[in-house]
Length: 301
Image 1 (cartoon, rainbow, N blue to C red):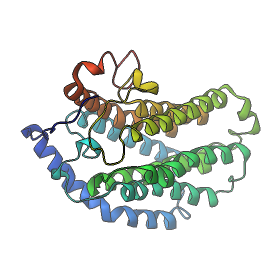
Image 2: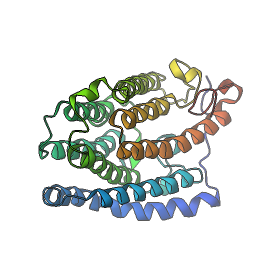
Image 3: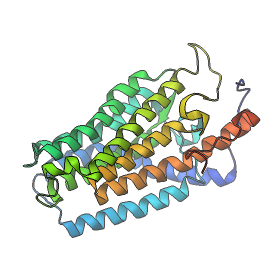
């Protein structure tokens, strides 16, 4: 473990323009995200998307994820250890996480309540699985955070927008567009459900355990940076991201859905470039202590 002795903020010209441009664009989302949710709640009851339009929506979301994946190798998302003043106004990390993650929990509740399939055993199980993750992420995880870190409004608004869209993407398929009878009671004994569920909960527990390790690296009042070395951090520098990637891979499998696959792709597109940035940061800050650890996939990358 080494003390952080004054890390220089990245002020390279290659980052200045993208960060400022993205901040301006994303700031527009901040006010519109809540309006979008209100509009969604009203219109969703009246408008049902056709399967063709839904697949087009999934295609657009996948393309945007590709753009995000590439962009994040050049622009570090400005939260956590990479937050800089160039991202603009920031608020409490705890409040930001609640505001950012709660929308998808609420969207899924709304869509479930208005679905005629809401008490079908398999569909109800999907709903519970999904909500376990987001209840913890929106209402438990933020309260466990330590320190006085802040999150830029631009980052929070981007998260809100994605979560609203993703909540719709998952809920529309599960509760409305999936073929009648696809998720019959026999689904519980299918290879899709069994394998996917095992991955889903294994990833969830890995993510929670890795977050626990991160939270307990410092004692109260300590502001130094430490290299996490327990659990899956013995193999990768972003074990929490590995857990989340495994979790949503499990979700895609257990639902056997394109919407789940697109969500998994978004998870990879968002977290893998950030894991790369964290790995490089640790290499510069801790040097040889990083050893042979990979970024996010053990023994691979």
